[in-house]
Amino acid sequence: MNQMIKGLNWLSTFMEQKVNSVEHGGLCVACLSANAFNGLCQPCRDELPVNLWHCRCCALPLAFPSSELLCGDCLKHPPPFDSSLVPWRYQYPLDGMISRYKYNGQRKFGRPLMADFAGFLEKALHDGRILKPEALVPAPMDSRRRRQRGFNQAQDIAETLGGHLNIPVSTGLVERVRRVRAQRELNREARLANLRGVFEVTSVVPERLAIVDDVVTTGATVRVLASVLRQAGAREIQVWALARTPG
Image 1: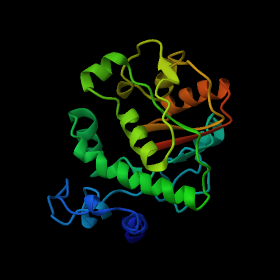
Image 2 (image 1 turned 120 degrees about the horizontal axis):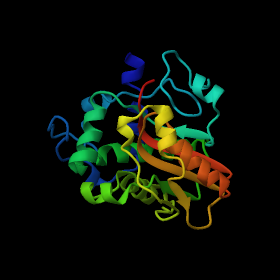
Image 3 (image 1 turned 90 degrees about the vertical axis):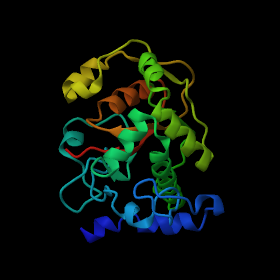
Image 4 (image 1 turned 60 degrees about the vertical axis):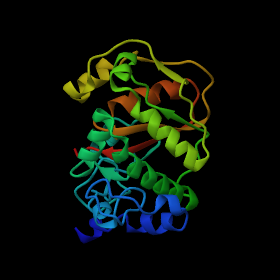
């Protein structure tokens, strides 16, 4: 447990070397401590559930120490993407932070996560664990749902990461061409069926790209989206998300 709690300490150290005075100070969004860094104090940052042990392809949290093994689903149904970078598990207290950001429009809860995620990705790129994508593709949102919510959280995350990492964001590369039922109501098989034919590529696809979303649940959305992009010419597809739900 101590190893998991301390799993992002390296991230704070790495990012502290790169931030300016604007990112220091202010109140922690979680506990209102005055000693915040990128919106979170260190004790609250240490409480975030690190996705330390996970499937090397889809980042599904595993119950045993490994980041090199494939989960059963990826062995049985290899996904159309190559790798996933997901720093946290979708559990308390991270789930509450994402929900308040996503459903209540309280962006102050999303900004610390995006800043730390950018540092996580920057280190992965620096260490050569991943190749830099040519473009970031935010998961498209239904237009009606976007009007209700006021923003697409996947696009918000992609634009933040793109700004930090100097990667262009292709917001119009893929569009939703039909309306579907809310995915939260469905299991994995129903989600895949629900999304069949929902995405359409509208322009030339880069060979190397990353799909960006907030939370990967069953993986149905990124599977379908990656499949469409693969068919359109993408050769290497990464999945970048803040959190992954446990199996």
